[in-house]
Image (cartoon, rainbow, N blue to C red; front, side, top):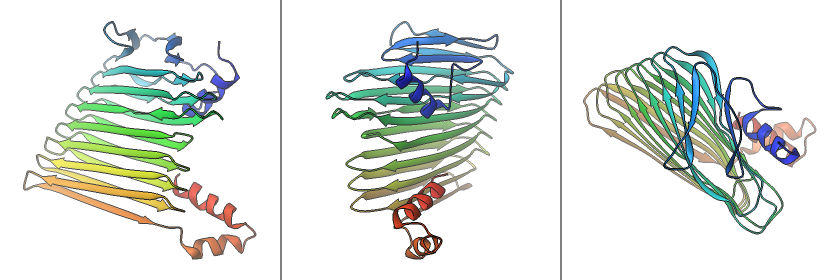
Length: 306
């Protein structure tokens, strides 16, 4: 049964007030807490490593899969392998949030390796939220790996969110794209205190008409550190764009390394990067409306990360 702490994490990482409808697999403290399958979506335990295979049938429409992970005990360290097999012309939403509540002195770590195999014409919206809380000295650590193989005409929207409480994260994503496939990535990230966050994207556009748009928005506060690496590789007639916009505050450090490689004369690739502090006129304008400086900063940050 889900206690109050687990329910709060479930709400934060998956926007769920209760057990969802449709297909789901809820993992808590290293064990399966609850599972449900549907006629079109099956979830099967792996036999060689810890994790699951999710099979989505050809032509499945308007269905969702929730696979949240909850850690509420200090000292848990786990690596989980989840594979998503998405059938031809399917159109689904996958919610894969992970939250750590650590009130102890030992670090808690979740390393999730997610592999996606999208067949021809499949469309997936994938939402991954990371969240941490708890008043212990133990760290909350996430190291997600996402590996994607996209067939002709498939599309993937990735929403990658980390706003609060994560002490350390290294996020690695690799995508291999066939003809006329489409990738859209929107990353939102905030760090504070002594936190560190590294995001590493490598996207290969291997077929004619493939397109990718990888955008990160982040805020770095206090003494935190962020690094954004994004490599777009055009191996055929394709279009690619990567962008990093960051607000830097206090004594934080932000590094942006966008990279483009064109291996075809008809590869059209663009990169952009901007790092800066909150503009003084923005603060002044909001403070004239009665907000304190801290309230004005919070409102600007919230709007920036939407």
